[in-house]
Length: 278
Image (tube, rainbow, N blue to C red):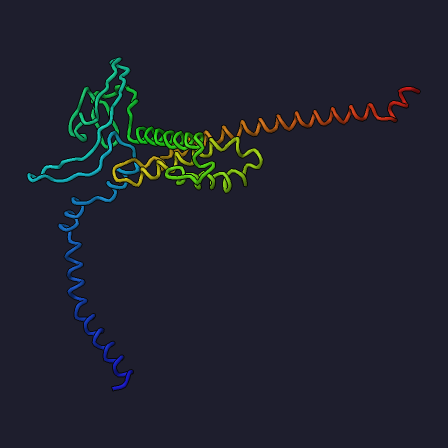
């Protein structure tokens, strides 16, 4: 039997297997997409709830939920402090978010609906100063950032990494700092890049640390919050605005000084002295 006949036979066998197995596959697919199956899958896993629960702000760090032996749900989470001030009652309420029992109970005239806290009294005005998940995570990121930078600075003060190769955490962060300096600051800011290095490094590492935190299940996606981006944009705008004003002022001062020196040189030139004597 030649090669062409073998290939034709193999194609025929696979075609027959495909035709025979297709009805059972379609039947299985039909059974899997039945309404009962859909309701079961939805009750087990809701992608929208998981995604938006990670992106949106919340009053706790929620890591996972599991069912007990009796079918009851157990939540693994870290509650955060809730700080509310009621204008109508002139009362400051400070308590843990666990008092709401994940939205199933009320506490001190407030209840939690989704990711928001509302008053049980209609029309009551109150202010929310709670330390939410985004706020707490930014504070933790700031603490870690300050600790890293101070530790590296102290090592440089001791001479480590100056006369010898950097080691440990210093050796890990030095290439990143060098990258920000050589590939971001120098090409875009010119000779005055060192003036803006503290700000650039602060923003760079603050965003980096929050992005790394955001990869951990149950933590906050701080950089995905539009308010975070807005605040950084406003701060950068103010820095650019004042830097531009400062540079224009320095340029005008240098121009006036140069013009004064030129006028002075012209007034004491030999030709002018001769005219003055005549």
